[in-house]
Each structure stands twice: as structure tokens, then as C-alpha cells.
Amino acid sequence: MQKKTNAMRILEQKNVPYNVYEYDGSDNMIDGVTVAGMIDKEPRLVFKTLISKGKSGAYYVFVLPVAKELSMKKAARAVDEKRIELIPVKQIEAVTGYIKGGCSPVGMKKAFVTTFDSSAQSHGKIIFNAGRPGLQVEISPSDIQKAVRSGFADICE
Image (cartoon, rainbow, N blue to C red; front, side, top):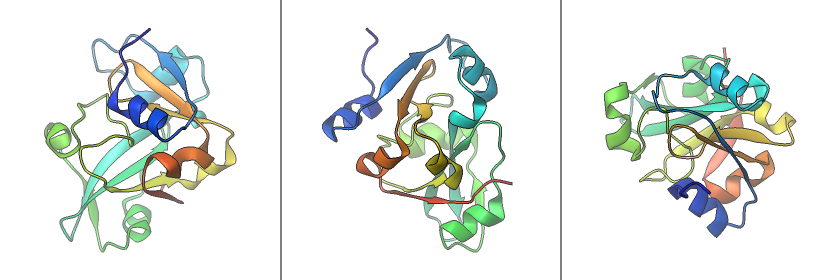
């Protein structure tokens, strides 16, 4: 059994049932669509976690299907900001506590406003990073708010 991540421990503390998927993420250069194939899941069910900063200086987390692109306008509107921009990769660990390729919306070092793409609500289960490269968790979208302060909005292009 793999070592539990902070995200997995939080899911357990909140009594959120989850499944774990492992893949070879050792080179940390794999895109999400490839990860979906490696765990034998449709890309529409596998979500990526993006970190942004608003014009106000606040950080925001957006979680969307791996094959989709974040709409900066829709995302900004979803969090009531005039403008947002993705943070540079080199800042991900300092802001979230997670490294690139291992960023989970659950268990960041601070509780940021988190928005999942509304498409998540149409699936029985969705999959996202468990807190380290090579590890994904699958949970019910209805359980997301038990684990992280979040909402749903149309945030994709």
C-alpha cells in the first residue's frame, strides 16, 4: 500500500470514501490526458488543479477536466474578481505546499476559495491528484464540499 498523502488523510478524517489510482509519475512531466489513459479512465472524469491569483492579491484554486482549458474570464467571474492569472509553476509549492504534478485541491497549506467546473456535477465520480505525482483519488462530486470549501461554476473555455 502506498504512503498516505495529506489529501488522503483529510478525506478519511471527513469520512469521504475514495478510491486510489497509481501510475508512474516519476518523471513528473506527464499531462492529464496521458494520466487518464494510464489509469484507464475517460479524460472527462479526470480533473486537474490550477492555482491563480486575482487582481485583489487573493489566491484561487480551479479544478477542471484535464482536456479542457480554463477560461480566465469565467473563472474571474466565478470568484468575483476583475481579473485572474495563473501563478508561475515555480510558486506552486510555496503557495500550496504541493509540487507541480502533485497539486490536490484537498489539503493545501491554506484554505483557498476552490471552484470545480460544473461538469463535475454530472458524473457519479471524478478523479483528481491525491497530493503527489503518480497518485490520483476518485470521489463523488457530492462529497467534495465535505473535504474542501468549494463551489461549482462553468469555468472552461
